[in-house]
Length: 126
Image (cartoon, rainbow, N blue to C red; front, side, top):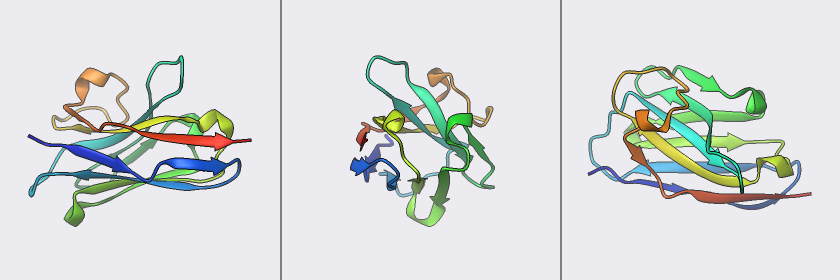
């Protein structure tokens, strides 16, 4: 059973940066793609960024383009989300998710993802 564990969340001022990490708990991890989602209070969960695991093709939601960067370290079974120029609107619980079957990068349908992390709270103060 794959477990995804996020870390790196916290409290930051507007304009600041955070770097999230998501580690898979298994020795051999080779999903088709990984994604970061977020869910703000009272809102639906939305996809933020995604990357294929082997080739590194990326996808970003329009609202984070130019500010967030998704990357992965295959040797460490880890995917990262570097978040810059944060604003209070980025406050949310951030989740990583693994897609094991071939699909569309940046897929928003949660049912397409097979494993989820527990989430990490990111709060941006104004």
